Length: 297
Image 1 (cartoon, rainbow, N blue to C red):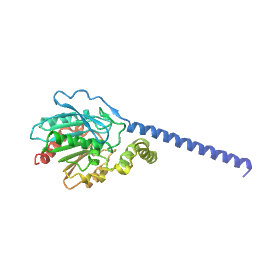
Image 2: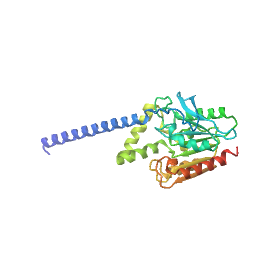
Image 3: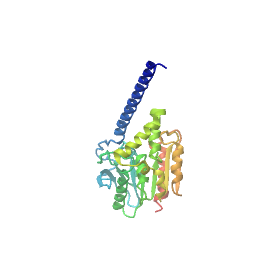
Image 4: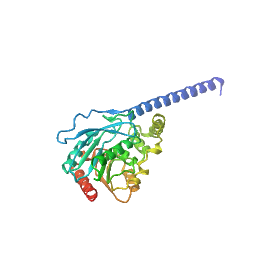
């Protein structure tokens, strides 16, 4: 090989390495911006409580450091309280339809905005790490307003994960909808839908960001390790076609729960609001579960 060829090959290698380095920097920059959007607060004004619910506005102090905003809707004196917890980047407004049919059955209802959502304060969304303290504040409030009456929690996605991470809780029933078993899988599944073969690299960058931005280790966000601490009956529900929390992951979460548990898949549903997907079946399943486990208290 001549000197000229050697120099040309070295120059080609140099620029190839530069291109790779620039590509990695660009990829990291894009991932950082994605991380920004994932943890950024989701502010949504709730407006007044719907007139048919006649609820009162409440503010709760949470150990997360946030001020939790919500509505409390009193029900029959001999019925318990159901706490409704929305999914990520939503608010209590997502739960109003559930509140309506539960209130018609006489339950008191507590709807809250988890920290950094809706009208609650908070600097960032933490996938359940800080939101779990908001759940504890809501449970404490429910017991304060109706002492000695049973309490149930219904949590969708983030709301369900925060409930599990908050355990043990003084509650009598828990309904967990579309809840991830580990944050590693939750992020991996979501990234895979967009980036395909590049998803493992992007996932690791996002998990690293969680530590750098929030000081949270992915090991702290594993509902599958905490669900056994829920000593109450647990109803786990998910869509059979959910690609963000696949059936095998839902089954693993369910298997880790205690002895009093039930698993329901909504056939054909993806990662969607299960009440909106099939309101009749959802309502029947939920009311049967609550009647069985709250009214025997």
